[in-house]
Length: 99
Image (cartoon, rainbow, N blue to C red; front, side):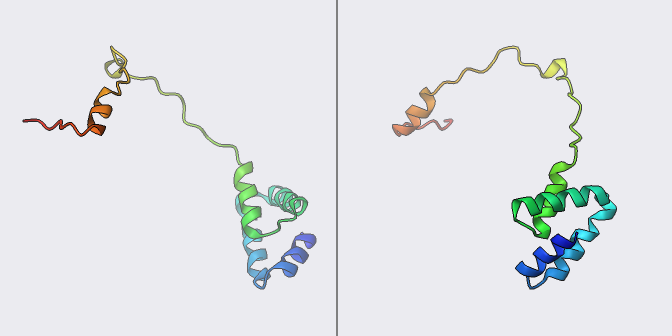
């Protein structure tokens, strides 16, 4: 973390706020994860709170929703067919207003 602190001090006038923001991530992500993100930011030569927090968020496993089947009454009986004739007629200036 000392290298991160030095990197922040060299780049930002608000280095102390940046460092505190990184430290505030420890209760949420754990010390090891924050340390790994800091090391990765140092390797990238892009030390900032935004980069470290971004790396932490990207390292989180995503909880994807379970695949929900389509209810039978919502399954299409006939797939729609792409038909560009109506669009082409609109481009020619034809009117399709209900009368």
